[in-house]
Amino acid sequence: MVTIQGLKDTIKSLNYKWFEDQPNMIAIRTKLQVPDVFNDVLCVVYKKNGVETLYTATITTEPGVTYQKKLLNEKGCWVMMPAQMINAYKSGFHQGKPDHRCLRSVGKIFGLREDDKDGILLNDKNAVASWVDGTTVGANIHGASKKTDLTTVVGAFSAGCQVHNRWSKKEDMMNIVDSYKNVNNGLITYTLINESDYKN
Image (cartoon, rainbow, N blue to C red; front, side):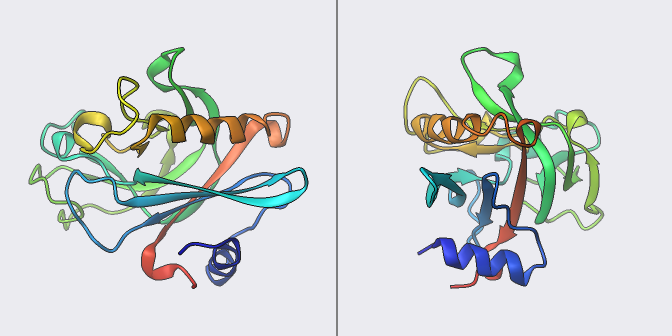
């Protein structure tokens, strides 16, 4: 079970920054690698009426098989890799759609591109992780389908984005983020860790 203290201890152990004046957004990538399944966890620790509060949601931090096999970029399919990405995100709209609020990648993000088209994540031995300008990748944090609250298959909903399986939970996240829009220019730090890094 994820707790606020566990997240704080984890961030400290990784020598990352913990924020007191803005949301701490931390995604945990599960050890269990199952293609096209939403099985990662997004955590946001924020202050509600001055009290630290924990939001959690089920997401995928990995692209669906669709775009691992059908590349949208000739360099390969984007895969976000564990790191703390300071001021990397800001509230906006996914693919410019006004009915799809999201966190847009506007700063430096960390990841790699796989071009082997085998549909097996992190199997491309030539792929090397690096820091890139998020605006050139478009690796947003958004929702899957608005037509149904729960989506069970990642599929084409992620070509490297971090995607919620429940639309309503994505909306909850955006409400939290937007309540801080006057802090730090509205910029949000995104931290991705492996499940093995989490301190119970």
